[in-house]
Length: 571
Picture 1 (cartoon, one colour):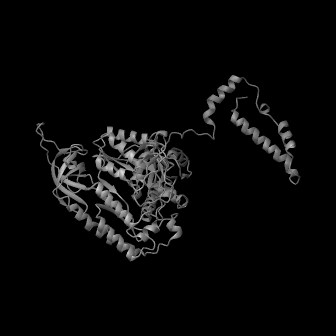
Picture 2 (cartoon, rainbow, N blue to C red):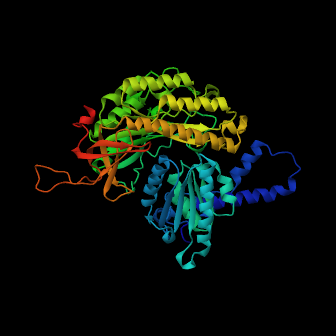
Picture 3 (cartoon, helix red, strand yellow):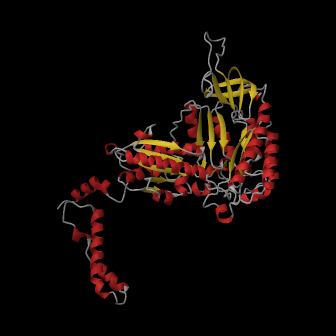
């Protein structure tokens, strides 16, 4: 008799004994339960392992177990190498989804997949999705119908085409996605990307596979994202995931889970790697980026709480100890003095003065701050559970401008939120006038299932009213943004060159410290030390004298090459 695996022998012995017990007891179902001592007696007199094993040399057993150990069916250490391994990504939504794509690709690359830039050549098509508004989800549903048609027309010789949905929409609509027209083979929520190789292996057999479990500690700290953007100038680095704020309109806590911060050493390692690759600008990412708090190391544990902006509050218990955002920002900005540092998206409550002092004093931390307001009405802010009043927000704006006089400010606004009146709307318009933002992201409210607003409030502002109010917000913003841009006329701006302008091949474009687009002529730069004149290239810092402006961009005259630390723009 060939040696049989120990685990399988035990399994068969259990089956035999269970069946024997069921058979012998079937005629006695109506009797009183067997006493414990009688049951123990039966077990003791039952078959033992030796009754199922032929006497064989111990060496043979050992050898067999060692050779067949990988065949244990219920224990899989890694997925088999994929047969059809060309993967194609489509990324929708925010910068976090761009970073998620890089993480997912890093995991798949290590498991034998290769990336293709053509959907028609792919064996696997993965859509990294957004669920923040209804329009974003409808875009995905429309795309799935197109991919479904491609799937049906695919030649059998090419093998099966697997379609997967990743990210927030997968988390929010998991059951509907799997059932609706059977278009999707794989679902993976934001915390399940490590499981992608296994899910795709299951899908290769013709079954649907899903993992949408949220985690309380997943940060992908040990996964180094593979940066594949065509832009070799800037990059995004995720420092935390999830959100605890629970604003009534927001789906993020339900699709991305609770806040957890990536360990500082992992972040510094990635930024250092990007610096060595020549990246000149890094944006630190998080749903609530400035509430970062790393408690993973004992050396960072302190008894103090994280500091909030004056007159701001939270709906959750403040975090205790840990390395806070100001400490991380300090360490990241020291890695490469010629690398710009930005961060998004913050919450207004997490701007203590020490953060503002660091931004002011460190040249390579951009003097641009995003402070989402969402509304200018106290009544609406309370309905949204934002944790501050209009007055507190305006005090924060004044405090920021006192600390950083030339700061560029941007914001988010939602119009047409539940129970918003015309008076509430006018207060939001007045805030846009009062603050005069450099940039703003303006949206009509879109109710999301699972949110507090969905359960407790009525989406009672008609669509046509939302549309009209949004148009008014946009008009006021552009009016004020143009005034802000005009103040830059005649000034000298330090610009990071990104590439050729989309409107003219004879011009270059880049962004200044305030993240405003700057366009300038692609002309030779004279250099007394070299025989041939130089030309600015992507990744160079240049000085540009601003000669014209609009609400969205600046144009100017190229003065020459520069660097951050010696730039007259910071003198």
